[in-house]
Image 1 (tube, rainbow, N blue to C red):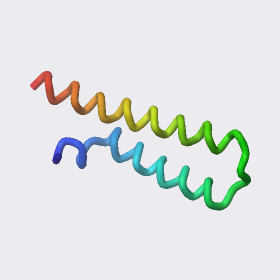
Image 2 (cartoon, one colour):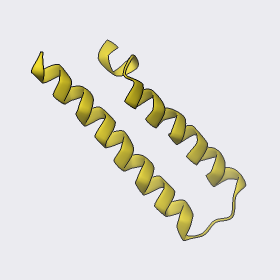
Image 3 (tube, rainbow, N blue to C red):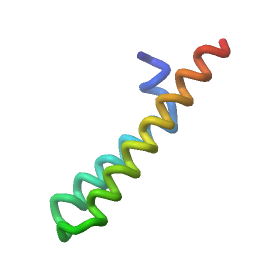
Image 4 (cartoon, rainbow, N blue to C red):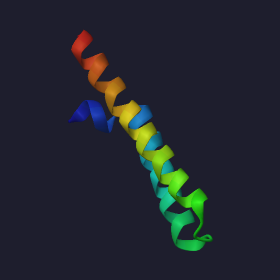
Length: 58
């Protein structure tokens, strides 16, 4: 669990998720909101995959 908490890629994905949440709450509701959430989910999946890949190398 520590490897996820201290990973810079996971931390940046979580902060981008927070900003996506704020944009969803305050901004207009259109197709761009769905695209932002898909983009955030993909970046989080890539960050988690990177951490798991680095852990398997050790």
